[in-house]
Amino acid sequence: MRLSREAVVTGAFAILDRYGLGDLTMRRLAAELGVQPGGLYWHFANKQTLLAAMSDAITGGIATSREQVSGDWQADLAGLSRAFRTALLSHRDGAELVAAGYALRPGSGQPLESMIKIMDRAGLPDPESRAAAAALVHFVLGHAAEVQAHDQLRAAAALPEVADQAPDADAAFSVGLEIFLAGVAARCAGTEPRSSRSAPGR
Amino acid sequence: MRLSREAVVTGAFAILDRYGLGDLTMRRLAAELGVQPGGLYWHFANKQTLLAAMSDAITGGIATSREQVSGDWQADLAGLSRAFRTALLSHRDGAELVAAGYALRPGSGQPLESMIKIMDRAGLPDPESRAAAAALVHFVLGHAAEVQAHDQLRAAAALPEVADQAPDADAAFSVGLEIFLAGVAARCAGTEPRSSRSAPGR
DNA sequence: ACCTGAACACCGTTCAAGT
DNA sequence: ACCTGAACACCGTTCAAGT
Image (cartoon, rainbow over all chains, first blue to last red; front, side, top):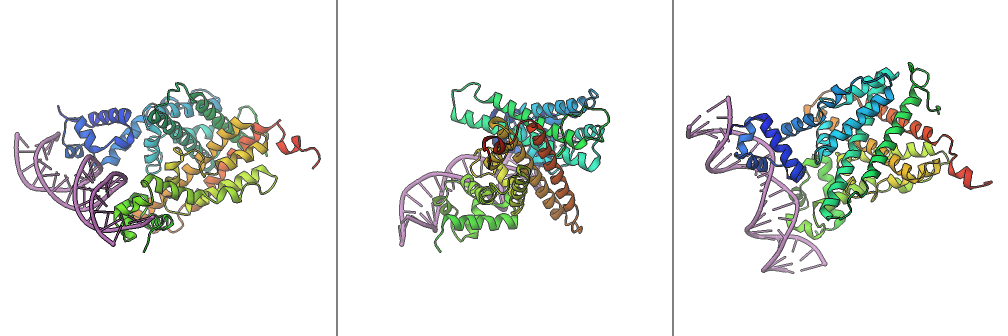
């Protein structure tokens, strides 16, 4: 069967979900697709490009669908952050994969630009909204990467505990997100258009 | 000359600073030390253990020296975060190195525990202070990793711009840090700091 | 246009054997 | 105790040659 970019990406996700990022090699992928390793390089210039395509597949579709939902910027920002987290957790090692390519390709498909827009509407001017969005992205990426690392440690140790500390991770994410939202709200105090005043300044 | 754990770590840092994390291989390190690759495995069980030792060398000495400086928890937390950032930036790819081992070895030498203590004193109870500290660590790690990735992209492109956007990065870090501090302060509003509650007349 | 075959230049790790 | 020599089982990538 003829190969294609999509077929390669699909096969790559199959290996990622079954064996993890460490075992996602060009040679293993070629074997999975019934092809010689060199054949992959007609469709992708190198492994990095393939990983970038996978990263875009994970983060794509989040930003556009959640751009402007309501007038409440805090709800919008929380929803976008949760959607980002869910997308990262939807594939094994998804956070590590996206984080690896994130710094190299600024904003290419990440929800960063959407976050900046939401904060702009909240009353944060451009340089600060960009810095704030970057901080939020770093938090979500780091949190999701930690969750998935713990997942794999548990799987490797074959612990019989079923639901272990999944609720802990969810609660920890909510705490971090709420702190961030409160911090942005405090910084917007005075300049904000019409949102609720929640936190006192410093 | 006889090898030692410290000599191996020192050589590893030399390669890291000169060639980057991607070129830090056991074979190259062995050549640098005038030794056969297999010889390294008498001092370190595997590469991961060596990288963990390097990570500890980077983060060690921050937490202990900056534990309780003043009574102002915001100043303490900001100082600790900045010291953490400086430590990560003190070696090439330092943030990526520390981040890679971070999720696998919870808290082993990271300033996370110090952050938790500071927030405890600020009035945040345990489960929340832990989640907040994790969020702060993720922000600092992600920020530093992005800064260093941009550093290398600039170096690879051989851009003639000298000071480029280093001030931008510093300002972005400050914004993220201030937002976080304001968010924690907002969450602590109402609950008095521990020192004024439990210590009756000091 | 799309892929094979085969090679190039690497990896981390192990382990008998030497000293 | 500490390291060598040599191997094992892999990597990503290239590229002439086939179809």
